[in-house]
Image (tube, rainbow, N blue to C red; front, side, top):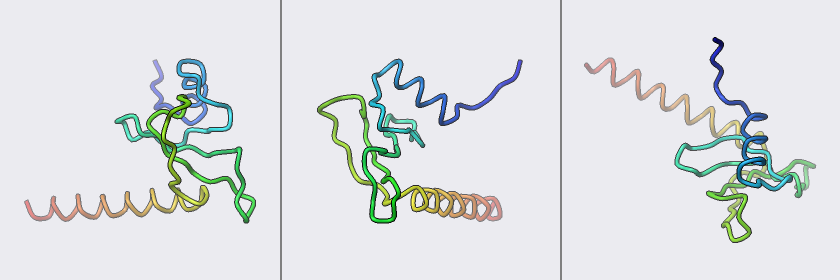
Amino acid sequence: MLFRSPDVVWMVLTDRKKFGLPPQYIILWDLGDGFQCAIDTSQVNSKGECPIKGSYAFHSQEAEVEDCFEDFGDFLLDRIQKEVKYQEEEDWLEEQQ
């Protein structure tokens, strides 16, 4: 049996089917506590790119949706920088033991 971690396509299709995720959102990342980051394809910034929004419930009309990043590039750079920092801290902790 082949095991694969969920990808963006799987997350978006599942959230649309199970939770009624609106079509303008493409889920990129889920923190695991329910907070998700998504591309909002209903908006375009001055560079012609879609902003990244965050919410605990994109599917709810009453959901609070917050601005997270100006575009996908900013989102990706943030994720990479945080992961590098995390890995460096983990390496440092291992060296101290």
